Image (cartoon, rainbow, N blue to C red; front, side, top):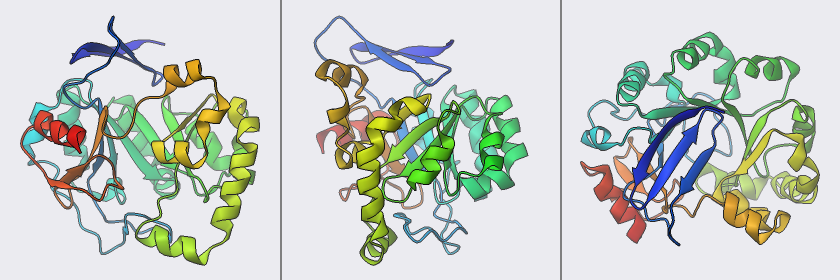
Amino acid sequence: MSLIGEYQNGNYKVSIYDDGTKIRENDLDNLTPNFPESIDLKITNYCNMGCKYCHEDSSIKGVHGDILQNKFIDTLRPHTELAIGGGNPLSHPDLYEFLTLLKRKKVLANITVNQTHFMLNYEMLKIWSEQKLIYGLGISLTDATPSFISKIEGFPNVVIHVINGIVRLSDLILMQDKNIKLLILGYKDIRRGSTYLKDNKDVFENQVLLNYYLPTILNKFSVISFDNLAIKQLDVSRLMSKKQWNEFYMGDDGQYTMYIDLVNRQFAKSSVSKKRHNIMENIVDMFEVVRKD
């Protein structure tokens, strides 16, 4: 585990390591940031996958956001983490130039792609990873095939993304004991996700199965993490002591993180927040608004 970088944020120090570990520390009884440690950044609503449960309503009619002309990018602190997504972020014509800009500013770019797009763009993503244009790669799982599992072994910082209610228990079993990092996301009951939930009872059945079997798979992956929605849906706190919870829980939405939509030019606490604001020129100003929401 090697240190990538460290910085002071408000009254505490942040250290980030190459395996994805993040440590916050100070000698006080509170951690009060001045700027976001990580940002969920939507750069496009274009996608050709047509997933019926897509909470973003992404489609082939979706448009790209302007990712090169944003003054707030110049105010990002070195080692801030950007989780770049869409839609299909690989479809954005300015993505390579944007990643080059972020690297020059020492901003850590992570990108999330669908499994299909990962397989189609494997060589390019491999090069970007080797060139440190992307720090982490999230892959939204569609099918845990042996060929897919073998492909991800070549990437140092891959995290497989699955959705509570969509992922099949059989796929989780296929990925067990293969040194895989897993991120479980909560099911977002908005836009197409709302329609899909009403028409597909298997979502609830899959959620019940995952809730029941979750304790048995915790030690089957090198890392299992959850977004805040999944933490709530799966009652993750039941699986650990209070001491462990205080050590591992990374904070509520908007406490150290925020969401920016470059398609609609808005920002919010998270991608499911109904309360949104127009993008401002300074990330500190935007984060201050988010923390008050």
